[in-house]
Image 1 (cartoon, rainbow, N blue to C red):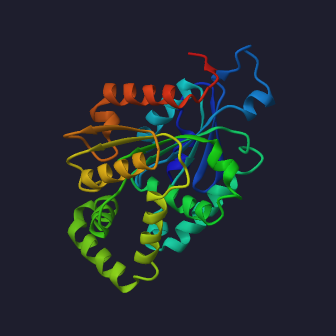
Image 2: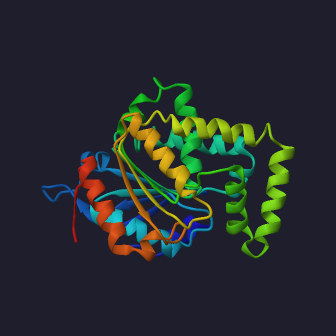
Length: 285
């Protein structure tokens, strides 16, 4: 499991890993200190929290690189993994989203400002959380108010075929075409249990109850993330009054933009963090 491996990886000096559940690991960033230099419960309770939703099959070393960015900025990081069965049987995905929602509202995190960084299918996991929020916006208003920014990297958008392609490339790359064909057959056979849920989730995501500024990283040559569909979503959100920052490359790699274009990625992300005005505690460099 990614969480277990990451917990054993020395991400950074002064960072401690707490495995909360099978798929959720909390990284407490002791590098960050309050302006006075002292660390106490009050400062811990108000340290901003990065909710990181990695892509399927993410290697611990790759996720660690993103965690390090936020550790240096002064965030604690909550890494929440997704599993393929939560996608294939969306009811389980909704249960996963509900558990995540409850965790974010628990006493440990209830006073934290939040930033969301979702990669690829991690956007689907976030959508499952949004479905619950949209059903009772008043109940979850305090949570939506705490989300100060949202980052979407290689968001899987497009047709059902795009999703099936993603499954093939992620699960069995050597049998990509076969997995895609079987997936499409499966989605057709279990339309009420899959496609109808996907359509509900897509509608909720487009009409998201979270109006915090959003940053999109995407590229023209990504078979799992249709650039035109991403641009349509961006345009729709802008018309709803959401502040958007977008970084698009002509050539890049799905969930690999940081590796391919490190300087542009980091500069864009840094400017976004400054713009959303989350006030992290100063990190001890």
